[in-house]
Length: 216
Image 1 (cartoon, rainbow, N blue to C red):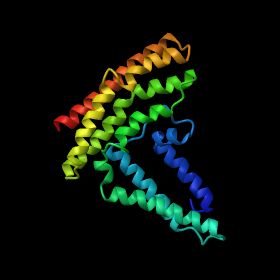
Image 2: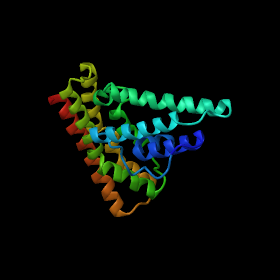
Image 3: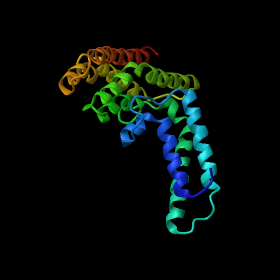
């Protein structure tokens, strides 16, 4: 893997996008809009292995020939250390808040998705249909953290319950998706059915997550 720092950085970004389709959608990288991150403990371990592998590669780079190569190497190491430090301190196992946590990312990623083409709506349908998997993995990690004593502040859990209820409710974004679809493209009856069923499935997934936060 060792080579030019810029090539190494490019490969790191490519591999991170493959591991984080949510992140890929947010930054505009094509090809991942139908997929989800693995937010389970196993997914976190996969990310940790990747980050450690790249950290070793960055640390093994020869001294840069100019200030830009040296700066790139330093920035790469600092980025990797920041993420690895968060994992080492248990951050993913208590990553629930009202501003920037997977609870928000899972909902807000839909705002960045293409709604002008049939292909874009197919991606939206696929993500809604499989939302239970990403939120289920996230729940597994929070539960694993709870059992380890890595607890979330009570006020954040209460806010999470409220946010999950909003996403599950009749006035949620997901409830509006079928109408948005009908107004945007002339999709097939099959895709329209997928959108309608997927919107309900997404709401149900958030409802179950809210129940977990409330009861557990």
